[in-house]
Length: 140
Length: 406
Image 1 (spheres, rainbow over the protein chains, first blue to last red):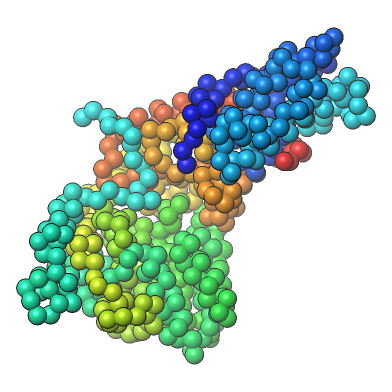
Image 2 (cartoon, rainbow over the protein chains, first blue to last red):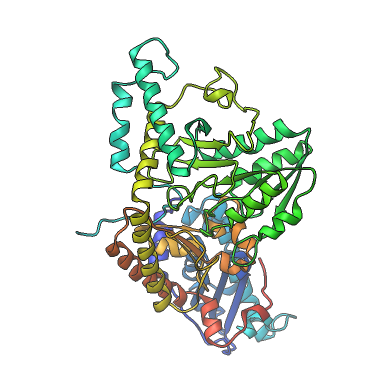
């Protein structure tokens, strides 16, 4: 299968690889996917509680080139947006931007899920939702 | 010699045509283009002579006689002809077929088709080394069993099934024995009588011949095997496979068989030492690498390994100037990881992390060394990117993590 230039670019030069302090109350961590499925994404966001803007984002991904590219792109897109704006990112936009073929659409879905999971974890830490802090993230 | 990129290391998928094979074929495209069935002129005679020469070359490679070789379009057709041909010929005698879960799809899908028609098929499981036990074959044979089909060398993990022992079991019980020997013939000594096989599928393009040509060995004595043909027409190949013979392809298959026979020892020991160099280079330098399939009882040129915490397709992208293949779901259209690795009980996460290296006649030490370096570099880079690697380094037991799922 041939990859789009954008997928290859993100694969060769992934943006925002790394970690944020998961214990920081202003950091939300999302860990989605499963090793048996061949994809696991960890996406972290750091939010300025005053402005609600995502000031930093980091990721690590176990998965194919399209999964790596989708999560790399997701970190680029969430940075500078408010939490509410980040939640409006849809997987179809990732598909379009990276020219993902149909068989790789699940990679973009996972990236969208990772953003949502990270936001949920942050909100739980802040006590702005009913949910408890993400159990998976806590174990990571 | 300067290293030429990209490097081909996927010899189980296909092999380049040996230049000697190509040279032997060339005149049959342009000058000696006759139809082997043309009985009344020079052109036909020339073609027929070439065919019979090739038939002898193929027969000699496997210890058979010329009349036992039926030319087909390749091993998939040979598998179909062997299994369906036996089923249709012997259905009154019995309706039971025995095969193995790790067979090539050409065998498995053929068996599934027959199941729809009312045949009963036993799919024997394999051990964690990828091998079946001849005792399991013995235990599975019933009065209704008409055929046992077990591949010689597996196309993914390269393991060699105990064909000789299975052959003996089948002979004792009077059951026909077919082996898909596509990956093995031409690479290791093969004798149809020593191994007690009745039907053998062979492909040219896995042994440095052209694509689109193969053969089926059909035993003529002790016992004489009869097949119902799948393709009817002019009665070519003693009625078992009609259609104008692919003279150029057959000449190529014959030449490839002749070369394989002559060079078998030197070829296989060279390929084996390259494989061992690759195996040691990778496993000495990279931690958490696992071999899939039996470590020794395998094709000389096969190395199938899983690089834990790295997904296979992303690794292929990282070594894009080396042509290899992966058992990862992402490299197939089905999104399912390799059924062969699953059958071995390799965990799905390790199946997603598997790479198949297939070494062959034209690989060099320089290529192997370059590959070791590239793989090492790519695995390290991808592990730095892998949340699983990070978790393991932090002491997390991945099997105990409750994954959020998709």
